[in-house]
Length: 368
Image (cartoon, rainbow, N blue to C red; front, side, top):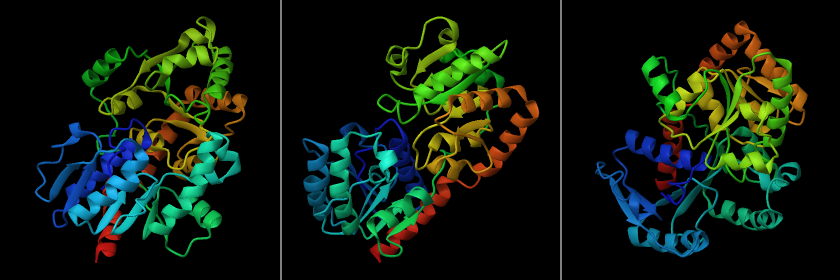
């Protein structure tokens, strides 16, 4: 397993950490070699007798993927190399499997959210990765369909394997836990929650979120505050020209919220707001559903696929539509309860145990 993304903050990092843990939880018969870039990770899985942990060094990601990892695979006599991110070691002396978390670079209306040189590079190398891989795992059916259409792939080259929230994501009802987390992040009594990251503001639709919140703020007498979680997200205030008074004083930036605290934060939130422009598999939606948090999200791409009927769907380009949905959910207790119940039901569709079992089946079939 290529684990250079193990320490990433964001969706791919969460996927990487969970798929390793789940595979090792259900499988004690196969041998695993874990390739890290970060030496500090050595020992994380030492309790598993079928695990060997190795630090693989290289100056940059490209050399790590394409030179250091193929050599490490040869040295360790690996049968199948699995990368939870979207690259494959082209010179690896074994079968390869990678995970694709979207086909954004190949879809014109989605590619606009990326640097044009990155788009050109990915469009050049991605077909090579697909050719190398015996199987490619896709995190959503939308992603599978897009790659099949764009690259004209053979049947079953890409296989959709859904994942889900980590096992600790569930409704938190313990008042002492809720109070401790609220104090830790200085959370208000009532709030709307959204999560994002630096460098992803346009993709996460932060501009429209701020516009919609300003409209919502005007429409209600006692508005919920808006909590935007994520590392260094306080910088969005200046970047998007959010005022320090008026509606702007009710927008809070608690910083990075630790994974262990997120279930309580979701449980405290009156609404999870996620009108993103672009997602293949939006992990936060599955987390919010598992915690019973009502959701307002976009009616586009992977957001609609994952949310299904367990959320209020809006046009991400229409700030007024987003604001109206916020008002509707927060002012109608019956609607909130309905969305919470449907979210809890739908969250059972997305399970790391199922993801790990399906992934292991594919890896074992290739090794055989």
